[in-house]
Length: 242
Image (cartoon, rainbow, N blue to C red; front, top):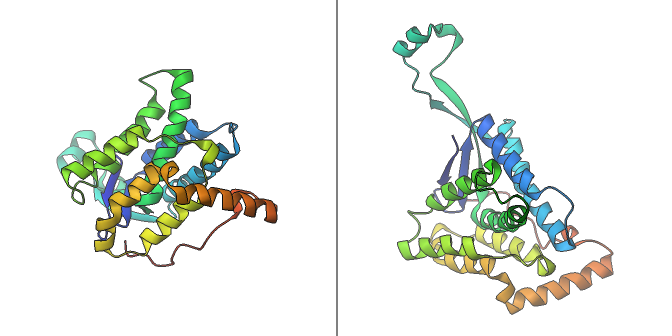
């Protein structure tokens, strides 16, 4: 069973799941975003989401973190099913990894773009991949309850539902700077700035600085003969106070 917990210093969330949980989350998102992009902006959006899938895959492969959890298997259950004690334990392994909040909310906004495209073709409320992603969204959102007031919490939920990505003007550097800045903040700063940061993610196209950055990035791409994905302002800090 998937589980999402807000980290102690509000930097991000810890995502937990066994192999099958995380594998199906990976497959669900991959199902939604795979295929030929309809624009350069959509190609860049896909690449950003593959970064999240990279962490999900490495988590269920045992290359991130892991904890042991009780599986409620007691002696009576063992006897009933005739399990030998030496063949089965009362613990299950649960894989886990941390992920920054700004990056995660951007990912969810981007995935919604692809869900809308799939919905037009499939139009199936029982689609297991879309429902898995929506379940994951609910876990992420409700992990924030202790950090946000009810009014702020409802704004975050509404914003995620209504935010629309315009792939023709999408550039990753704006969000990269937001996430790196957030990763360097203290817990108090993160709590104070969270709503402003979410607005800059949900409503990025309304910011003049964003539109100016887009023009600058396009000029730089031409000068360097490279793609937007090749341009980075700075690296994430090696140590984050999660």
